[in-house]
Length: 344
Image (cartoon, rainbow, N blue to C red):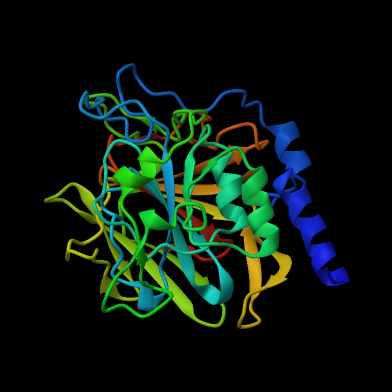
């Protein structure tokens, strides 16, 4: 291993253990100014990742995280509308990828499945002991996956669970399906805790700290630009998503339109690694605190996010300190770079 690779490995290991700063503020400052001791809670007999009533037909199980690409050649993706939560993260060169979280529903097709990043592992520490589906990683990240508290169901361990989709160019043609991936779970996986707090029946979003929802735009920009906009649709009571100016459709032609969109403004640090094109590999700073916007029930709510340590779950709060409550249903979580979020 070269000196540069050894240095990168040390830096990444320190980051994975929580030495990185978060959200544009120092971790130590965040920890000292935040009194959070517990994460979000949901009502009894509801799904932890949607806040909807538990479906008795779905067995109690861990969450499944599937890494899906969002490069232009990867679209349209399969499975993104079946996921309970989709996390969008910046990767190399201004491209984004999705960590799609499945728990309450299955998807007959998911993909294109792509490689792991250290951001995925920092996020996954909030998920109990989940399953993790991905298509490989560099040596540093592969070692982090091996040591992480998750069940590796990637293509390297279970190649028979994956297929190459005809008509799509490599590497954007690797797909799987959730039932087979769930069936590959180790015995020591555990169900996920709630990631968000939800409103009860008939409960409206707060007037204080919120406004009628305008379209909200997030941008990731380096060598290329990925532009995402969520716009309230009164008829469906969802937020319709566009990507790079076009409706974001899944593989069967249905537009992405979740009940909630959460924008978590974070810093991105250079890991010291580069991809095959020579672009720097970033990592989102998820430990700390920062600005958060939430689109829910036709309102734009501006608040704050905080995660003092890896052992805790991120909380999203109003200026008053009360939790921001979402509409029960699907949520997209956008890890937006500092300075790249605005209402249109």
